[in-house]
Image 1 (cartoon, rainbow, N blue to C red):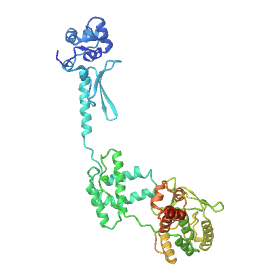
Image 2: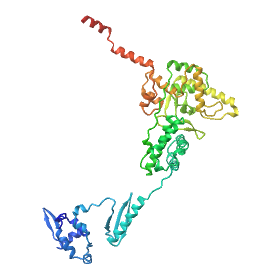
Image 3: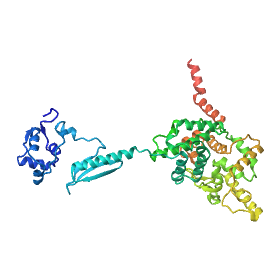
Image 4: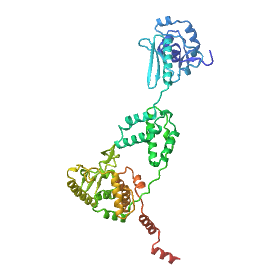
Length: 467
């Protein structure tokens, strides 16, 4: 015997060498056809007894006794039995089915198992070999992936549209059609490289697009490529290998207390005075204020509920629900806001009478003089004119929201309360983005520290006495 073969074999090892079940090996031992030796307290079969046993039996004679003996592969007699039992994953297995005696060859193909059948082991092994060759061939067959433009169309329809808001879908579609398709759409999905995207971004910046817009273009492509990875079309997202352009944050310009009062006095009687007051007192986003309906406001109870945002999608006005749960909120109305909204309701009734048949019925609080929704650009123009009339410097409409947060901070209102008023999901957003600490508040903090650290007059007198 070769030194690699153990001197004593377990019943299970002998069963695998002879192609038998373990019970059949036990029967052969009990009939005295195979010798047995004790190793400690365990019964073992001497390996030297196997070759004489195999030579002295033929398959037909053994089968007539109910034993299906097969010719053992030579590897079993030249290597360690225990080690040879381990098969490499993916090589398949051959076994005999006890129910009908058929031989089966099984192998994994992806997430499924494929099986072939034959009347002999040799035939099953041949069929299994052909099946493995077929699987290898199909796995190595090249799959021609679509061009980026074709994939992006599929991504927009099947992945984006069912799960995002209409405005987001329209925004994604615009960026794909206007920026990605013309420059990268002709490139096959698996041939897209980081330098392709880098050149596109550089070109857009040279064309005058803002860094924020270019970052968004990159983000849209990155989202699409992440989906391609999930669909097992590509193995990496090249957009993650390209750094986005740096976006310079806008310098906020909130009102201080005096400017806020000056502005509200100046816009008194303006047809959009209530809109400006809402932005300044409650920090409503422009889309939230323009999406307000009279049914969302209870002037008697002094509360207002944000349920919708006004958006223009594909040329059509739509009332869309806010993105987050925290944006859907109910707010208590200050008295100055209640009075402004009452004035707005009276002026809207007058505009309805003046317009007559030209009036368009609408549930909205803020409309044009004919009842149609207000366009955001018209609101911005009116806001800038109101600032000029009040003698104040030019600001963005969104600075009304910044002013609201800052004025609340000056009044020492809890940041948690300010977070809920503004509709933020995290307090960090409130503190880092929407609160501009005025110089007066910094001076107040310095004065309080001075009071804390400065010795009292009694303490100074005591020091002089002991000195």
